[in-house]
Image 1: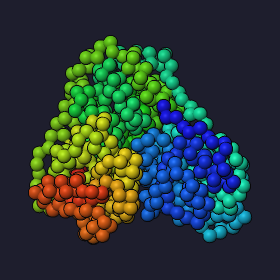
Image 2: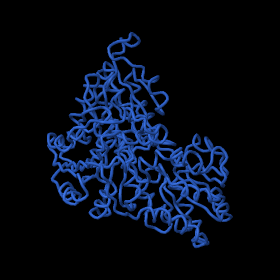
Image 3: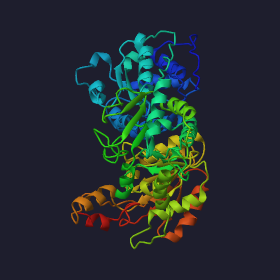
Image 4: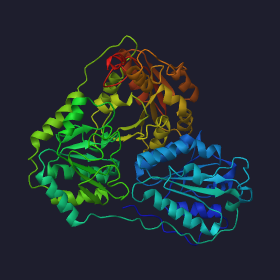
Length: 562
């Protein structure tokens, strides 16, 4: 349990801006990501005197927001970003959407025009309650400094209660300069939902009747404690574990109970095998459309299997699926209790677990491939696999190239993998900056050519803070994921997906990073050795095969499908 600083009621607080910074400290915030703006200059000035908060200056508001989301994924605490009004806030909206889709706690502070100008369509005026109302869990605009502490406590509570998500606090610039209360309120106690003994017993009773159960583990089990408890619970019950979308690092991929990763483009026979299950125990996942393979595992709205869903937000349970047993409880606390209750016949489903494990185990076997139009990206993953230890940290951008990592890299709970469940391109470079800043060790980010040209400017932030980030850019001169869909649904009618790219290696050198290039398979070893041993930031440009667009199919095969 993280302890928060005791609010310092003796702080020398004169303005609302100073109160805001004091409240950040009281809420346990040790880092904020920002693009400076005139609408919250007084907050920046207050941060000048607060050495307990690390202020990271970013190059675009989308980068600042993505960094805050990535930081939250690592700490489990709300990530914090600060942006200016109008363009700054709308640039940051992609991070708000990602935090909502990824169930990640995020608090965004937005500077606002002066109160006297509200409602006049003034310069850069935006109604943020309307703009963010569908994405954020909480949006408030503070007009009275006496209500600022209350608003911040509400925002942090909303971001962390139930399904975590984004909260927005809007700050008129004239309000920030006004006199404020000198007392720091601090955070509200975090609500917890422990499992009832009866609910744990009910789960165990249903599981006892099952012949082919499967546990789906979600992002709420990302902490180190949760990973340990997940393993203990799975082994105690002998139940196989499948991992929800982009959560491959929660459970040892080589463990006999590992049943695979529920990501994109899974083979039909693998999905069919999952559908043979007669009980699904979903813990810490909202069971979104990717994890459920388009709502067919389990089937919506009425699952074919017995469905037990464990989550601590009543708005999640039963919202999409008719649930046989909904357990309103914190996922980690439930697994702890379940592990103590389970264990009567852990070998009962060994044959079923072996069938499930055989599929990802077989898919993870790499068979070297050569392509006429570039490097097959799986070969690069094999190069990383040979070099990286149990503490490797990966950040995935969105794109088909990320599937090669998920299929061929054997993740363990000691690894960390960050990636946007939202599918937002541009997460890779900002996420790597945040991870390297937080963890203080090398972070490898996999980015497509399209995604790099969205937020690759944050490589400058990595250089500025001397961060050990290695960007591996998969360059196939294409918006590859969309090209794959085009070939599947409109074969031979390619439009709007071809790209003319810069020389990424030379571009990285211009930023001040060490740069390497892989144009053929034989270049992989030297390039990775150089990039991973670089002092500071490095980039590897990989001329990847467009034909071998995915770890599961080729463009030609996609075009042949009916």
